[in-house]
Image 1 (spheres, rainbow, N blue to C red):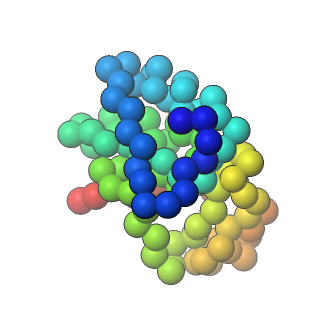
Image 2: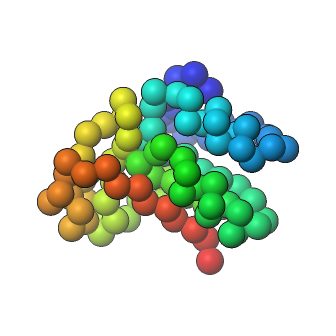
Length: 100
C-alpha cells in the first residue's frame, strides 16, 4: 500500500515473515491507523507496539470510541482529538486496541 487508504476498504497483505511485514508497514510516510490480525495475541501485540501508527488495532479495525484519543503519526496528522490525551495534542501517542 503506497497511499493512505480512506473509505469502506481494508487492504490486506498476507505475510509469512512478521519482521518483513513490520518493515514494509513502517516504510511509508503515513501512519494514521493500522491493524494486525493473528491467532497469537501476544505476538500481534508485540508487532503492533513496533508499528509507527497513531492507532493500531488487533484482530479488528477502525474501532473509535469518544473517550479514546484519535490521531495519526508521520504525515498522517499532528496531535490528538478525543479523550484526555487530546489536551496533550503535541505528544506522539500510540493506541493499541485488542479484541478480547
